[in-house]
Image (tube, rainbow, N blue to C red; front, side, top):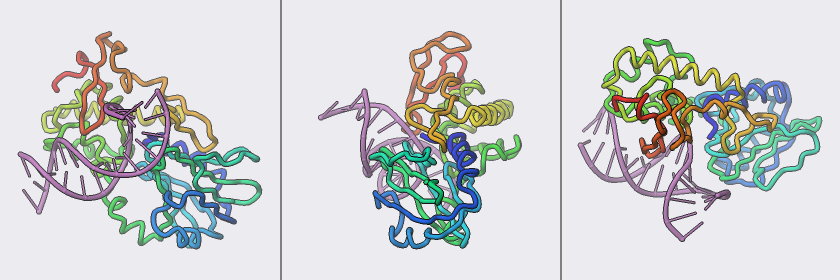
Length: 273
DNA sequence: GGGATTGTTTAAAT
DNA sequence: GATTTAAACAATCC
């Protein structure tokens, strides 16, 4: 569930807590959450110092000396956080990094879809998934944004969710941005006017920035680096609100399947589908 | 116990 | 071959 704003919030919260600290010990309770050989994983990490914490797409990346990259994908229910002192691991805590002075990084994942891996810079750069990621939406000019979708025949919602096309967007922010721009999720990108693409660019940047400001969305069980819930879910206009009235026109919001995902939209405000 | 939930991969279709 | 769509997968909740 964590999308761009949630991972951004986690990275920002984690950075001051872990930067400059070294990994003194590693406790791996669920080896399956580690991609690659778990012994090699532990060998690589031990003693490394955290230099920086950042986000790329939905990936949370800790840059370590060596150099080495500790890469998390949180998928649906993954959490990377620094608990208050004395907090014991839960039954879904799969990995703990001991950073000394009673500072621990917990990696929790109830459904265990998430994963973590330790990669050297060449390994990271040659990783097909990483290399194939599309541009960061917040770094795109209106022109670049338009160029991405120009002439594509797929439905706009599918393209927004495609990490190779544009990175970091999931079901929540795709639905919200399309609603704000007045575009039906089933519209083929090729059928969108220049004005519509510009509106979508604008609404996407707005919704992402507002969500980051609010500390992400806490639908279900997302928590930030301190284990605190975000607030943006209170700003949802359409996501998960099938059957409720549209905040603009009052029509009942509808849901349909696009790219295998439920997609909530207003049949009045989001036409041309 | 079936269906829904997620992002990604892989296979199939166009 | 390129593009697009659908199914499969992981584990759990309701």
